[in-house]
Length: 268
Image 1 (cartoon, rainbow, N blue to C red):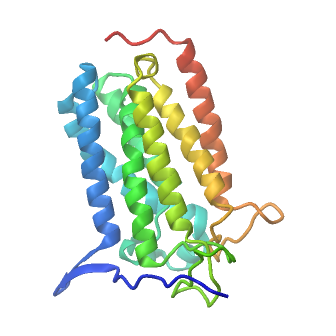
Image 2 (cartoon, rainbow, N blue to C red; image 1 turned 120 degrees about the vertical axis):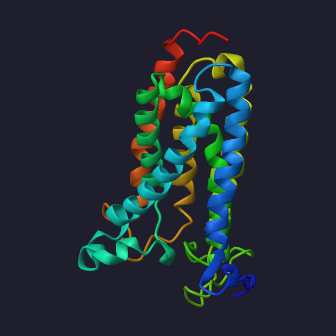
Protein backbone atom coordinates (compact mmCIF):
# COMPACT_ATOMS: atom_id res chain seq x y z
CA UNK A 1 0.00 0.00 0.00
CA UNK A 2 1.42 3.37 -1.03
CA UNK A 3 1.92 6.05 1.60
CA UNK A 4 3.41 9.53 1.73
CA UNK A 5 6.77 9.87 3.41
CA UNK A 6 6.61 11.48 6.81
CA UNK A 7 8.80 14.63 6.76
CA UNK A 8 11.94 14.13 8.80
CA UNK A 9 11.78 17.29 10.92
CA UNK A 10 13.53 17.32 14.26
CA UNK A 11 11.22 18.22 17.19
CA UNK A 12 14.10 20.39 18.48
CA UNK A 13 14.77 23.66 16.68
CA UNK A 14 17.99 24.54 18.46
CA UNK A 15 19.91 23.02 21.36
CA UNK A 16 22.62 24.84 23.28
CA UNK A 17 23.95 22.93 26.27
CA UNK A 18 21.04 22.13 28.60
CA UNK A 19 18.76 24.56 26.75
CA UNK A 20 16.57 23.21 23.94
CA UNK A 21 13.90 25.09 22.01
CA UNK A 22 11.28 22.71 20.62
CA UNK A 23 8.59 23.31 18.03
CA UNK A 24 5.88 22.58 20.60
CA UNK A 25 7.19 25.24 22.96
CA UNK A 26 7.53 27.70 20.09
CA UNK A 27 3.92 27.01 19.11
CA UNK A 28 2.79 28.03 22.61
CA UNK A 29 4.96 31.16 22.61
CA UNK A 30 3.92 32.35 19.15
CA UNK A 31 0.28 31.37 19.69
CA UNK A 32 0.00 33.35 22.93
CA UNK A 33 1.81 36.34 21.41
CA UNK A 34 -0.30 36.53 18.25
CA UNK A 35 -3.52 35.83 20.13
CA UNK A 36 -2.71 38.57 22.61
CA UNK A 37 -2.00 41.08 19.83
CA UNK A 38 -5.31 40.24 18.15
CA UNK A 39 -7.28 40.53 21.40
CA UNK A 40 -5.52 43.81 22.18
CA UNK A 41 -6.57 45.29 18.84
CA UNK A 42 -10.15 44.18 19.40
CA UNK A 43 -10.19 45.70 22.89
CA UNK A 44 -8.98 49.04 21.55
CA UNK A 45 -11.71 49.14 18.90
CA UNK A 46 -14.43 48.16 21.38
CA UNK A 47 -13.42 50.97 23.74
CA UNK A 48 -14.90 49.20 26.76
CA UNK A 49 -13.82 46.59 29.24
CA UNK A 50 -11.52 44.84 29.50
CA UNK A 51 -9.25 47.73 28.63
CA UNK A 52 -5.90 47.18 26.88
CA UNK A 53 -4.18 47.70 30.25
CA UNK A 54 -6.38 45.03 31.83
CA UNK A 55 -5.54 42.66 28.98
CA UNK A 56 -1.85 43.22 29.72
CA UNK A 57 -2.47 42.16 33.31
CA UNK A 58 -4.56 39.16 32.25
CA UNK A 59 -1.88 37.72 29.97
CA UNK A 60 -0.02 36.03 32.84
CA UNK A 61 -3.29 34.62 34.19
CA UNK A 62 -4.06 33.16 30.76
CA UNK A 63 -0.64 31.52 30.39
CA UNK A 64 -0.90 29.94 33.84
CA UNK A 65 -4.44 28.77 33.07
CA UNK A 66 -3.39 27.15 29.79
CA UNK A 67 -0.34 25.37 31.20
CA UNK A 68 -1.76 24.29 34.56
CA UNK A 69 -5.17 23.38 33.17
CA UNK A 70 -3.72 21.59 30.16
CA UNK A 71 -1.42 19.47 32.28
CA UNK A 72 -4.01 18.64 34.94
CA UNK A 73 -6.57 17.86 32.24
CA UNK A 74 -4.24 15.35 30.59
CA UNK A 75 -3.48 13.72 33.94
CA UNK A 76 -7.14 13.44 34.95
CA UNK A 77 -8.74 12.61 31.60
CA UNK A 78 -6.11 10.55 29.83
CA UNK A 79 -3.61 8.86 32.16
CA UNK A 80 -4.66 9.11 35.80
CA UNK A 81 -3.64 5.56 36.76
CA UNK A 82 -0.08 6.08 35.52
CA UNK A 83 0.39 9.37 37.36
CA UNK A 84 -1.05 8.00 40.58
CA UNK A 85 1.70 5.37 40.43
CA UNK A 86 4.35 7.90 39.30
CA UNK A 87 3.35 11.20 40.94
CA UNK A 88 6.64 12.98 40.25
CA UNK A 89 6.10 12.47 36.53
CA UNK A 90 3.23 14.95 36.77
CA UNK A 91 5.86 17.70 36.76
CA UNK A 92 7.69 16.42 33.67
CA UNK A 93 5.86 18.59 31.17
CA UNK A 94 8.84 18.38 28.79
CA UNK A 95 7.84 14.76 28.13
CA UNK A 96 4.54 15.95 26.66
CA UNK A 97 1.01 15.43 27.84
CA UNK A 98 -1.36 18.41 27.53
CA UNK A 99 -5.13 18.42 27.12
CA UNK A 100 -6.96 21.16 25.25
CA UNK A 101 -10.13 20.64 27.28
CA UNK A 102 -8.10 21.00 30.47
CA UNK A 103 -6.33 24.09 29.16
CA UNK A 104 -9.63 25.65 28.15
CA UNK A 105 -11.04 24.97 31.61
CA UNK A 106 -7.96 26.58 33.14
CA UNK A 107 -8.37 29.69 31.00
CA UNK A 108 -12.10 29.84 31.73
CA UNK A 109 -11.36 29.79 35.45
CA UNK A 110 -8.70 32.49 34.99
CA UNK A 111 -11.22 34.63 33.07
CA UNK A 112 -13.85 34.27 35.80
CA UNK A 113 -11.46 35.08 38.63
CA UNK A 114 -9.77 37.98 36.86
CA UNK A 115 -13.05 39.58 35.71
CA UNK A 116 -14.57 39.22 39.18
CA UNK A 117 -11.51 40.81 40.73
CA UNK A 118 -11.61 43.73 38.28
CA UNK A 119 -15.39 44.09 38.32
CA UNK A 120 -16.53 43.50 34.75
CA UNK A 121 -18.49 40.88 32.81
CA UNK A 122 -16.27 37.81 32.30
CA UNK A 123 -17.98 37.06 28.97
CA UNK A 124 -16.57 40.28 27.50
CA UNK A 125 -13.08 38.93 28.16
CA UNK A 126 -14.17 35.47 27.04
CA UNK A 127 -15.25 36.90 23.67
CA UNK A 128 -11.76 38.30 23.07
CA UNK A 129 -10.09 35.05 24.09
CA UNK A 130 -12.48 33.06 21.89
CA UNK A 131 -11.44 34.83 18.69
CA UNK A 132 -7.75 34.54 19.55
CA UNK A 133 -7.72 30.89 20.68
CA UNK A 134 -7.75 29.21 17.23
CA UNK A 135 -4.37 30.77 16.44
CA UNK A 136 -2.75 28.73 19.21
CA UNK A 137 -4.77 25.65 18.25
CA UNK A 138 -3.51 25.84 14.67
CA UNK A 139 0.14 26.16 15.70
CA UNK A 140 -0.19 23.48 18.36
CA UNK A 141 -1.59 20.95 15.89
CA UNK A 142 1.24 21.70 13.46
CA UNK A 143 3.69 21.03 16.29
CA UNK A 144 1.91 17.72 17.00
CA UNK A 145 2.47 16.79 13.36
CA UNK A 146 6.15 17.73 13.44
CA UNK A 147 6.57 15.65 16.60
CA UNK A 148 4.88 12.67 14.90
CA UNK A 149 2.36 12.33 17.74
CA UNK A 150 -1.43 12.08 17.97
CA UNK A 151 -1.54 10.35 14.59
CA UNK A 152 -4.68 9.19 12.82
CA UNK A 153 -6.36 5.86 12.24
CA UNK A 154 -5.22 3.44 9.50
CA UNK A 155 -6.40 4.46 6.05
CA UNK A 156 -6.06 3.76 2.33
CA UNK A 157 -6.38 7.40 1.20
CA UNK A 158 -3.54 8.57 -1.11
CA UNK A 159 -2.26 11.03 1.49
CA UNK A 160 -1.94 8.45 4.28
CA UNK A 161 1.38 8.55 6.14
CA UNK A 162 3.46 6.04 8.08
CA UNK A 163 4.31 7.73 11.37
CA UNK A 164 7.70 6.74 12.82
CA UNK A 165 6.41 6.24 16.37
CA UNK A 166 3.30 4.25 15.38
CA UNK A 167 3.59 1.20 13.10
CA UNK A 168 3.97 0.38 9.41
CA UNK A 169 0.37 1.20 8.48
CA UNK A 170 -0.52 4.31 6.47
CA UNK A 171 -2.55 6.58 8.73
CA UNK A 172 -4.58 9.76 8.45
CA UNK A 173 -2.46 12.86 9.18
CA UNK A 174 -5.20 13.84 11.62
CA UNK A 175 -3.05 16.55 13.19
CA UNK A 176 -3.32 18.47 9.90
CA UNK A 177 -7.07 17.87 9.77
CA UNK A 178 -7.35 19.40 13.24
CA UNK A 179 -5.07 22.29 12.31
CA UNK A 180 -7.38 23.05 9.42
CA UNK A 181 -10.65 22.65 11.33
CA UNK A 182 -9.78 23.94 14.81
CA UNK A 183 -7.36 26.52 13.48
CA UNK A 184 -8.12 27.91 10.04
CA UNK A 185 -11.86 27.21 9.73
CA UNK A 186 -12.73 28.14 13.32
CA UNK A 187 -10.59 31.29 13.30
CA UNK A 188 -12.07 32.47 10.00
CA UNK A 189 -15.62 31.97 11.23
CA UNK A 190 -15.03 33.72 14.57
CA UNK A 191 -13.06 36.58 13.05
CA UNK A 192 -15.82 37.27 10.53
CA UNK A 193 -18.46 37.07 13.26
CA UNK A 194 -16.48 39.52 15.38
CA UNK A 195 -16.76 42.08 12.57
CA UNK A 196 -20.58 41.98 12.67
CA UNK A 197 -21.84 44.59 15.18
CA UNK A 198 -25.05 42.71 15.99
CA UNK A 199 -22.94 39.68 16.98
CA UNK A 200 -20.00 41.44 18.61
CA UNK A 201 -22.17 43.73 20.74
CA UNK A 202 -24.18 40.89 22.29
CA UNK A 203 -21.69 39.85 24.94
CA UNK A 204 -21.15 36.12 25.15
CA UNK A 205 -22.06 35.32 21.55
CA UNK A 206 -18.45 34.87 20.41
CA UNK A 207 -17.64 32.77 23.47
CA UNK A 208 -20.60 30.52 22.74
CA UNK A 209 -19.76 30.35 19.04
CA UNK A 210 -16.22 29.27 19.86
CA UNK A 211 -17.43 26.49 22.16
CA UNK A 212 -19.89 25.25 19.55
CA UNK A 213 -17.40 25.51 16.71
CA UNK A 214 -14.55 23.82 18.53
CA UNK A 215 -16.78 21.02 19.79
CA UNK A 216 -18.06 20.27 16.28
CA UNK A 217 -14.57 20.43 14.77
CA UNK A 218 -13.09 18.18 17.45
CA UNK A 219 -15.91 15.63 17.32
CA UNK A 220 -15.47 15.44 13.54
CA UNK A 221 -11.67 15.16 13.66
CA UNK A 222 -11.85 12.40 16.27
CA UNK A 223 -13.38 10.07 13.66
CA UNK A 224 -9.99 10.14 11.91
CA UNK A 225 -7.69 10.31 14.96
CA UNK A 226 -6.37 7.23 16.73
CA UNK A 227 -7.47 7.26 20.40
CA UNK A 228 -4.77 7.42 23.06
CA UNK A 229 -3.62 3.85 23.60
CA UNK A 230 -4.11 4.01 27.39
CA UNK A 231 -7.73 5.15 26.93
CA UNK A 232 -8.94 3.55 23.71
CA UNK A 233 -12.57 3.65 22.61
CA UNK A 234 -15.26 4.27 25.20
CA UNK A 235 -18.99 3.62 25.70
CA UNK A 236 -18.90 0.25 24.01
CA UNK A 237 -16.58 1.28 21.20
CA UNK A 238 -16.41 3.96 18.54
CA UNK A 239 -16.54 6.94 20.92
CA UNK A 240 -13.39 8.71 22.07
CA UNK A 241 -12.53 10.73 25.16
CA UNK A 242 -12.11 13.84 22.99
CA UNK A 243 -15.67 13.48 21.72
CA UNK A 244 -17.10 12.93 25.19
CA UNK A 245 -15.32 16.00 26.56
CA UNK A 246 -16.57 18.09 23.64
CA UNK A 247 -20.26 17.43 24.30
CA UNK A 248 -20.46 19.68 27.42
CA UNK A 249 -18.65 22.39 25.43
CA UNK A 250 -21.30 22.16 22.72
CA UNK A 251 -24.18 22.38 25.19
CA UNK A 252 -22.66 25.31 27.09
CA UNK A 253 -21.97 27.09 23.82
CA UNK A 254 -25.56 26.71 22.65
CA UNK A 255 -26.80 28.04 26.01
CA UNK A 256 -24.48 31.08 25.84
CA UNK A 257 -25.58 31.97 22.32
CA UNK A 258 -29.25 31.60 23.27
CA UNK A 259 -28.81 33.82 26.32
CA UNK A 260 -26.85 36.39 24.33
CA UNK A 261 -29.67 36.68 21.78
CA UNK A 262 -31.99 37.75 24.60
CA UNK A 263 -29.49 40.25 25.97
CA UNK A 264 -29.57 43.93 25.07
CA UNK A 265 -26.53 44.69 22.88
CA UNK A 266 -23.63 46.33 24.72
CA UNK A 267 -23.32 50.07 24.17
CA UNK A 268 -20.71 51.06 21.63
